[in-house]
Amino acid sequence: FIRMLAAELSRVEGLPELMRDEADRFREPVKRCLEELKARGQGHFEDSTLAAIQFINLCVLGHFYLIAGYTEAAVSPEQQEKLVRSAVALFVSTYFPQNSS
Image (cartoon, rainbow, N blue to C red; front, side):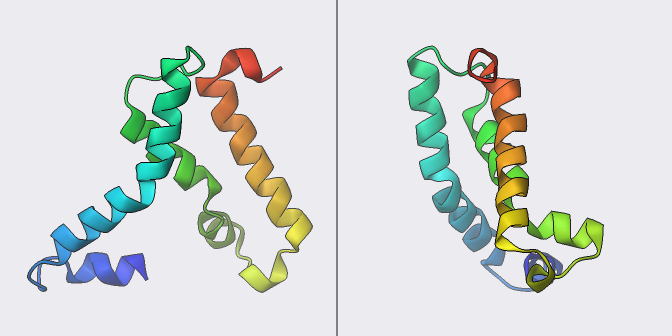
């Protein structure tokens, strides 16, 4: 779906702004949470927007399915949980090293 929208960005007036605004709205709660953690001395990152984008991208399983050649139906809930936990562990080990042991 995102690829189809991206292909239309230059042809549909207002679409780039709409996508940007929706992306901002979608990542705002994650960004806010990360900023609160950083304010308490728990996060080690410079750019909370970038960190939020990275976290969301790590947790979106669609990329895994595409790379591995699976469909969503072929990945069990247990496998999905394992993938998300792994993504969270990677993120935490990078930006919250004191909490990753």
